[in-house]
Amino acid sequence: MAEPRAIDPAALRPRLERAFDFAARQVRAMIERTPDYFPIYTVGGRWQHGGPLWTDWCGGFHAGMMWLIAERTGEPWWYEQAEHYSKLLEHRQHDRDVHDLGFIFLNTYLPWYRRTGDVRLNEVLITAGRTLTLRFNPKGRYLRSFVAPESLFIDIMMNVPLIFYAARETGDANLRAIADAHCRTTERTLVRPNGGTAHEGIFDLETGSFLRQSTHQGLRADSDWTRGLAWSLYGFGTVFTYTSNPADLAVAERNADHFLARCPESLVPPWDFDVPEGPDRIDDSSAAAIAASGLWNVSGLTSDPLRRERYRSAALTILDSLCSEHYLADQTPGWEGVLKHGVYHFHKNLGVDESVMWGEFFFLEAVAKALGMRA
Ligand code: GLY
Image 1 (tube, protein in one colour):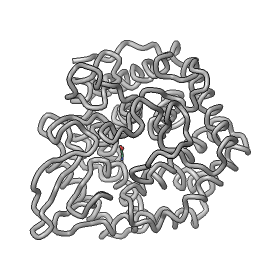
Image 2: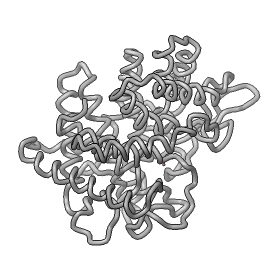
Image 3: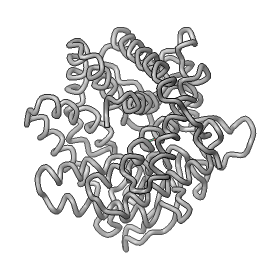
């Protein structure tokens, strides 16, 4: 089992500050180079290219970074950019084609609403939450993924908090019931007894019964796709902040323990823990970044003092690794992203060993937390 390194937060701080400033420069350069463009992954380190998207789910990460940078710098220019890019996403509140509305709105309209208190911004969040519930399959009791009605993805655990949020804001018990049902179905069908996770579950549309685990981006149906595991860790932790249900926190803790048990010393995992040693065993820095931010959260939620310390140290260990020259692109001339060595979709050869937008966002978010900017 890889143990977190003993990181001295005071020694790490200047490296985190440099990484944050570098990210701000990269985002500013992207705004100036390609205004109003929402990137997903790089090709050879360049954001703009003709490569396919698979699905359009990343707008909230680019705009979300602008909110983080605005909050840190306090500069009006960054707030203007954050609002402008968020506004470009507003129409997505009605988007029924993706399961990613939490990614899009919780990182944009939520910080915007928290800053201004403008109820019209809250209405957008609530509408987006209601739109997400339209994916609910009442027989299977899950929110279906974008690929097919019979498909449930682990990734949706990062989006279901938007429904919990809308339920809390409106007092609508139906919204809350849908969100709760989705979490219990995900726990039952995708989270394994050892704390690992499957990417996808397939259901019988006639009866609603669960048929089998499956995958798109992982190595196999029964393997540990590491980003999915990080989505689950982070997602169930966030859900616990709405439900206070010990079952939600217990899943996040099992995910965290499993993640740490299978990680190498750097705590930066390969894109799937079950890829054999060899050229295909490529790191996914984005899984590490999501895990760092999620571990930071779960460290603050758990009542177990050993876990609290271990998860916090693990988050700092990951950030220490990601701030090294190997991952951080600040020593790589011409590279337009912040973090190198991410993987989007290995099998489709999309964004393999590249910068990926969610890796950028969750890295910056985790850095912000470690710098004391966000809880
Ligand atoms: N589609 C979500 C992910 O690639 O993790």
